[in-house]
Amino acid sequence: VSFPPFFYEVFLYDLIDDDKSRIVVQNGFVEITLTKQISRKWNQLSHVQSDDKEIMKNLREEALNQNALKQKQRTEAKSSLLNTNKREAVREQMKLDEAERDRIDTIKKNERDKISEEMKQFEENQKIQRQLAIQNHIKSNETQLHEKIEEKEKKKTIFEENPSTNSLLAESKINAPLRETGRIAVNFTSRIFPTPLRESQADAEEQWLRKQVESRQASADLQLDLTDNEKDIDYLKTKANQFFQQNNFQSAIGVYNHVIRVFPKIPILYLNRGACHFQVRNMMKCVEDCSRALELLDPPVPDNLLQRIKAHVRRGTAFCELELYAEGLLDYEAALKLSPDDEKIKEDAQRIRNFLEKNQDFS
Image 1: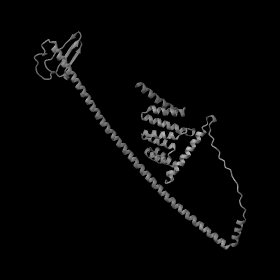
Image 2 (image 1 turned 30 degrees about the horizontal axis):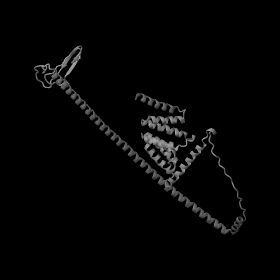
Image 3 (image 1 turned 90 degrees about the vertical axis):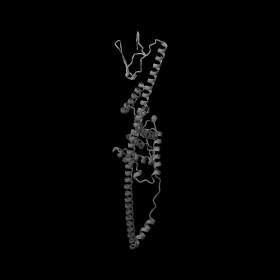
Image 4 (image 1 turned 135 degrees about the vertical axis):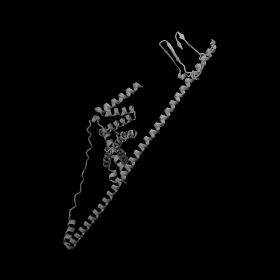
């Protein structure tokens, strides 16, 4: 015990239990409570009677080495226990993750089965409607053919009964004057864009319109084996929107997958499917769809301005949900450049900026 200017040292008679012993230094007094490892009587407190400093030095070093070894063992035991607890926690977390994946897979399977059943029912209804339309068309053609045959029979009877009328009609056809021929010039008015000449984007607008026409024409080859409803983009978009409003997002995604296969270059389809992916927390798919939409929204013209703003905001929000705040801020700033007066975009961008600055200061 060192308590300047005092120093007390004793080499005990027998071994003690370090974990159960204690020393308290308080108010100028030292209280020492020692617990023997072996409960037996000590004839004396110290077993060292000699004042030989070399012996005392050796005993002191041995005691310090034993104490260091004991501390090392305690530290290793504590570290081993901590690692064991960590491994157990990881196992439990893996079990929870596996259970959550199984739950999500079950939900996805149920949704896929439901969509498949709905599409099957939809196809059956379409098949029935096509059959009814074919039958009605056949009946209509038969009726028209029957009427034409009856009309011809009547005319034939009239001509046979009145040969003079027949000869007069023939002469009138022969003597009728020929119609004059001529040319008609047709001119199409070129589209006028409401943009000052110094800021004109006419070339970009024309390129954008050509891309829309080409995308419609490219999809025509894919529509040969489809029914009218299956290749009607407006009908399919309405169907997908109905699923979305009913919170049936997986069904909406299924419809958009079909529409995009038929019309692969329509950017609004990718934007809408990205919104569905966002609702089911599939953020990476949302980012991919918004990125594809931005690729198709080129060149940037006033006609597609609102879609470009929506794509940047939606992709930025998905990035933030993925905790990629820097990438999300870039998209919000891009949207702000396109719509600098939008207060909502300003507030969201500033909130992300403040969050990044706060985390940077903390780190």
